[in-house]
Length: 212
Image 1 (cartoon, rainbow, N blue to C red):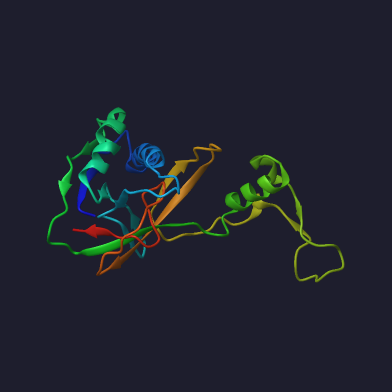
Image 2: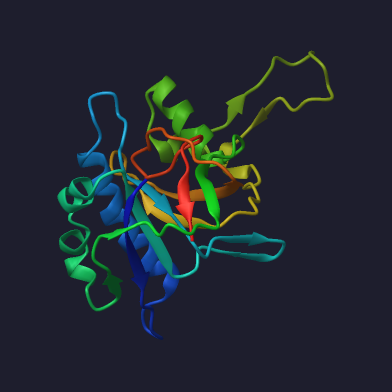
């Protein structure tokens, strides 16, 4: 990753930081989707230099950086134009070379809790041909009476406890189904760079971005 640009969010008393993250990252996600190749691989990675998941302190701060191997990729992405509607609340730098002196590298990865009730209900809805609201509220039979009494006979997805994930997140709306969901983002620091592709969220489970 040799080039980057930095986006700074500018919240105010009327427009909060979390709301801004949702709006900004929705626009970035649309751009990442457009630039995926035929194998759904992206060439732009996202870094969050103020990412914090230290005990009770969780947050992404007010900055993110978009990285690419070449300047042309970031020019084609055209971040300032994509964020033009939010120009009062966002500052976007020009494209710059990554500094020679780095703190290291980091992998920013999406984390999806397996016990998320809405996610499980969406999968149930697809399999059984019902809508999400129905899947969330219907009673699902787990076993026939007479089986192991230690387990419940039935349950509802809406009664499941929502997972507690100790990671910063951005609340987004699905482009396909319209549902809102949390994009939890973890950070793993490394000393050496790893090349690879990025997802439609600019994240990766292996590829690194520079830290400085």
